[in-house]
Amino acid sequence: MPDHRLPPNELNEFETRYRDGLFDTLNFWFPRAADEEHGGYLLFRDRDGSLFDTDKGIWQTGRTSWMLSMMYLTVERRPEWLAWAKLGIDFLRKHGFDSDGRMFFHVTQDGRPIRKRRYYFSETFASIAFAAYAKAAGDEQAAEEARDLLGKVINYASVPGLLPAKFTDTRPMRGLVGPMINIATAQAVRETIGDPRADALIDRCITEIANDFLKPELGAVLEAVAPDGSFVDHADGRLLSPGHSIEGAWFILHEAKHRRDPALVKLGCQMLDLMWAWGWDTEYGGITYFRDVKNRPVQEYWHDMKFWWPHNEAIIATLLAYQLTGDEKYARWHRDVSDWAHAKFHDPEHGEWYGYLHRDGRISTTTKGNLWKGFFHLPRMQWYCWRLIQEMQHQP
Image (cartoon, rainbow, N blue to C red; front, side, top):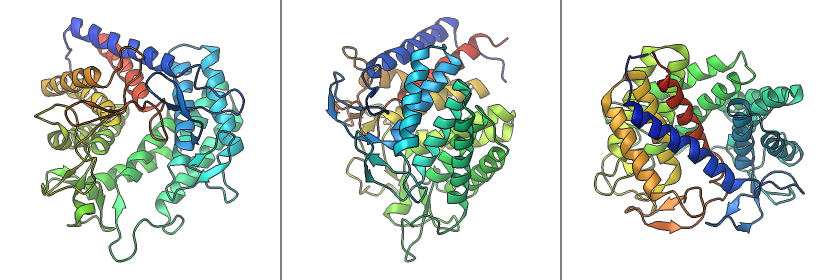
């Protein structure tokens, strides 16, 4: 690792921001989100934490349980954190799976199914939840469930036709999100219970991203490409998601750190550099949601809004890139995105972050929890960056 440091006073300020922020976020959600009657979590929350819907998302159930287990393993072994993690595990076991073995996406408070999507991301988030809980609780059944789910993820990602296609044969495409989430899933399972298949899955997905989605000739990382990896010059093919690409960049940088691989550092930083240029709003600040690689109009009407999660991912990516390279531009970008996001998204009165802002930083809705937002992106960022800062403080 490069011999460098942010000034000690600035490191201390960031450590306080992320450490205290993590507990601020935790205290917004718990214990109020724990559904002691039916299991799982009640996450549809308004600004003050009041509940505005009792439905449950399977993605968020797995994500929340994972986060609680990881905090139990790495922050403090508080029994209530493990008990709350178990609420999610038990709910997934009882209500997460359809009779065909696939998982639901959206259920009622008591677990009756509402919706099942063609994607396999319920399985990815359940896999990491079972893996983290298995390590935290010493639950071998959960470890087996995690490995079984990882096997399903590998099959869904590699065997054509197992899941319904998003596109017809007229203009088929494949997305960045699949290989990106597969990397993070394999990393999370490997780092808790271990799995001999993890490294091969990570290798394959990094190669796919580097060869097919990273387009230096276009100066961007594409959100979707043709089956052969070529550029599709239509609205869907021109779409850029800086948040997704920057998230994928830090997953690759995380792998670079794990392997001590300078080639992966270069790849992750290349992706971050390209998509920071597309994402950072030089007029208002913050990360723009969508762009068009040819600067044509974007059809998604929320394209210029500021969502919470791309900022969480950019905060991690810039800090990790700085730790691995010592390049001062990443420290500068980290200050910029962290300061902007904490000033605009954080609610000092009730805690947590608003999820959705207009381009100029005005609040669009007071929602703090729904099917997409819960106890995951924000606390993961706070937890991960707190740990990074601690490492940097102790670097010789």
